[in-house]
Length: 172
Image (spheres, rainbow, N blue to C red):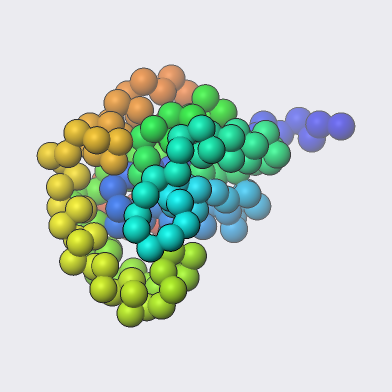
Protein backbone atom coordinates (compact mmCIF):
# COMPACT_ATOMS: atom_id res chain seq x y z
CA UNK A 1 0.00 0.00 0.00
CA UNK A 2 1.38 3.38 -0.99
CA UNK A 3 1.86 6.05 1.66
CA UNK A 4 0.88 8.67 -0.91
CA UNK A 5 4.22 10.34 -0.34
CA UNK A 6 6.33 10.74 -3.49
CA UNK A 7 9.67 8.98 -3.65
CA UNK A 8 12.77 11.05 -2.95
CA UNK A 9 15.58 10.04 -5.31
CA UNK A 10 18.39 12.59 -5.33
CA UNK A 11 21.54 12.69 -7.46
CA UNK A 12 24.30 14.87 -5.98
CA UNK A 13 27.37 15.79 -8.03
CA UNK A 14 30.25 18.24 -8.31
CA UNK A 15 34.01 18.49 -8.15
CA UNK A 16 36.02 16.43 -5.72
CA UNK A 17 36.02 18.29 -2.42
CA UNK A 18 32.73 20.07 -3.14
CA UNK A 19 30.93 18.41 -0.22
CA UNK A 20 29.00 15.69 -2.07
CA UNK A 21 29.51 13.03 0.60
CA UNK A 22 28.67 15.41 3.44
CA UNK A 23 25.52 16.59 1.66
CA UNK A 24 24.46 13.04 0.75
CA UNK A 25 25.02 11.78 4.30
CA UNK A 26 22.90 14.63 5.67
CA UNK A 27 20.09 13.71 3.26
CA UNK A 28 20.49 10.04 4.19
CA UNK A 29 20.18 10.76 7.90
CA UNK A 30 17.42 13.37 7.65
CA UNK A 31 15.18 11.52 5.20
CA UNK A 32 16.18 7.88 5.79
CA UNK A 33 17.52 7.47 2.27
CA UNK A 34 19.62 4.61 0.98
CA UNK A 35 23.03 6.00 -0.05
CA UNK A 36 25.30 5.05 -2.95
CA UNK A 37 28.73 6.67 -3.30
CA UNK A 38 29.75 6.09 -6.92
CA UNK A 39 33.41 5.85 -5.83
CA UNK A 40 32.54 2.43 -4.41
CA UNK A 41 31.46 1.05 -7.79
CA UNK A 42 33.52 3.05 -10.30
CA UNK A 43 36.93 1.46 -9.69
CA UNK A 44 38.31 -2.05 -9.90
CA UNK A 45 39.92 -3.45 -6.77
CA UNK A 46 43.70 -3.17 -6.68
CA UNK A 47 46.45 -0.66 -6.16
CA UNK A 48 46.57 0.69 -9.73
CA UNK A 49 43.52 2.93 -10.29
CA UNK A 50 41.52 1.49 -13.16
CA UNK A 51 37.87 2.14 -13.95
CA UNK A 52 35.50 -0.79 -13.77
CA UNK A 53 33.73 -1.52 -17.08
CA UNK A 54 30.75 0.80 -17.36
CA UNK A 55 28.45 -2.18 -17.98
CA UNK A 56 29.25 -3.48 -14.48
CA UNK A 57 28.73 -0.07 -12.88
CA UNK A 58 25.47 0.35 -14.84
CA UNK A 59 24.14 -2.93 -13.43
CA UNK A 60 24.96 -1.87 -9.89
CA UNK A 61 23.39 1.59 -10.28
CA UNK A 62 20.23 0.24 -11.85
CA UNK A 63 19.91 -2.50 -9.22
CA UNK A 64 20.36 0.08 -6.43
CA UNK A 65 17.80 2.45 -7.98
CA UNK A 66 15.22 -0.35 -8.32
CA UNK A 67 15.90 -1.86 -4.89
CA UNK A 68 15.32 1.37 -2.91
CA UNK A 69 12.27 3.62 -3.29
CA UNK A 70 14.13 6.52 -1.65
CA UNK A 71 17.81 7.14 -2.20
CA UNK A 72 20.70 9.50 -2.74
CA UNK A 73 23.46 8.76 -5.25
CA UNK A 74 26.56 10.93 -5.24
CA UNK A 75 29.69 11.22 -7.30
CA UNK A 76 31.69 13.11 -9.89
CA UNK A 77 31.44 10.61 -12.79
CA UNK A 78 29.18 12.17 -15.45
CA UNK A 79 29.03 8.86 -17.34
CA UNK A 80 27.71 7.05 -14.24
CA UNK A 81 25.53 9.97 -13.15
CA UNK A 82 23.85 9.83 -16.56
CA UNK A 83 22.76 6.27 -15.73
CA UNK A 84 21.28 7.33 -12.37
CA UNK A 85 19.61 10.56 -13.49
CA UNK A 86 16.66 8.98 -15.38
CA UNK A 87 15.65 7.39 -12.05
CA UNK A 88 16.04 10.65 -10.08
CA UNK A 89 13.36 12.96 -8.76
CA UNK A 90 15.88 15.71 -8.06
CA UNK A 91 19.43 16.89 -8.89
CA UNK A 92 21.82 18.81 -6.67
CA UNK A 93 24.91 20.33 -8.33
CA UNK A 94 27.54 21.45 -5.82
CA UNK A 95 29.27 23.99 -8.06
CA UNK A 96 31.74 25.49 -5.61
CA UNK A 97 34.78 27.53 -6.57
CA UNK A 98 37.88 25.37 -7.08
CA UNK A 99 39.58 27.12 -4.15
CA UNK A 100 36.78 26.03 -1.79
CA UNK A 101 37.04 22.44 -3.05
CA UNK A 102 40.82 22.46 -2.45
CA UNK A 103 40.31 23.81 1.09
CA UNK A 104 37.69 21.12 1.77
CA UNK A 105 39.98 18.38 0.44
CA UNK A 106 42.78 19.53 2.75
CA UNK A 107 40.40 19.23 5.72
CA UNK A 108 38.58 16.02 4.80
CA UNK A 109 38.59 13.26 7.39
CA UNK A 110 40.03 9.84 6.64
CA UNK A 111 37.82 7.92 4.21
CA UNK A 112 38.26 4.26 5.19
CA UNK A 113 36.08 3.06 2.28
CA UNK A 114 38.68 4.54 -0.10
CA UNK A 115 42.02 4.28 1.72
CA UNK A 116 43.62 1.64 3.97
CA UNK A 117 44.93 4.33 6.34
CA UNK A 118 45.00 8.07 6.93
CA UNK A 119 48.63 8.01 5.81
CA UNK A 120 47.68 6.41 2.48
CA UNK A 121 45.02 9.07 1.96
CA UNK A 122 47.48 11.87 2.80
CA UNK A 123 50.05 10.39 0.39
CA UNK A 124 47.51 10.92 -2.40
CA UNK A 125 46.64 14.50 -1.40
CA UNK A 126 48.98 16.39 -3.75
CA UNK A 127 47.69 14.44 -6.76
CA UNK A 128 44.09 15.05 -5.65
CA UNK A 129 44.65 18.80 -5.21
CA UNK A 130 46.16 19.05 -8.71
CA UNK A 131 43.21 17.11 -10.12
CA UNK A 132 40.67 19.34 -8.30
CA UNK A 133 42.41 22.45 -9.66
CA UNK A 134 41.88 21.22 -13.25
CA UNK A 135 38.08 20.91 -12.88
CA UNK A 136 37.13 23.88 -15.05
CA UNK A 137 39.73 23.13 -17.76
CA UNK A 138 39.20 19.38 -18.14
CA UNK A 139 36.80 18.04 -20.78
CA UNK A 140 36.38 14.53 -19.39
CA UNK A 141 33.60 12.78 -17.48
CA UNK A 142 34.82 14.46 -14.26
CA UNK A 143 34.76 18.03 -15.59
CA UNK A 144 32.63 21.03 -14.76
CA UNK A 145 31.52 21.10 -18.41
CA UNK A 146 30.19 17.52 -18.14
CA UNK A 147 28.43 18.33 -14.85
CA UNK A 148 26.90 21.51 -16.25
CA UNK A 149 25.59 19.59 -19.27
CA UNK A 150 23.86 17.05 -16.99
CA UNK A 151 22.34 19.84 -14.90
CA UNK A 152 21.16 21.82 -17.92
CA UNK A 153 19.54 18.79 -19.60
CA UNK A 154 17.59 17.66 -16.51
CA UNK A 155 13.99 18.84 -16.65
CA UNK A 156 12.95 17.96 -13.11
CA UNK A 157 13.59 19.64 -9.78
CA UNK A 158 17.18 20.81 -9.56
CA UNK A 159 19.32 23.04 -7.39
CA UNK A 160 22.82 24.41 -7.71
CA UNK A 161 24.84 25.45 -4.65
CA UNK A 162 27.98 27.55 -4.86
CA UNK A 163 28.67 27.64 -1.12
CA UNK A 164 29.07 24.78 1.38
CA UNK A 165 27.42 26.71 4.21
CA UNK A 166 24.18 26.96 2.23
CA UNK A 167 24.32 23.39 0.90
CA UNK A 168 24.95 21.97 4.38
CA UNK A 169 21.90 23.77 5.78
CA UNK A 170 19.75 22.52 2.86
CA UNK A 171 20.96 18.93 3.25
CA UNK A 172 19.74 18.80 6.83
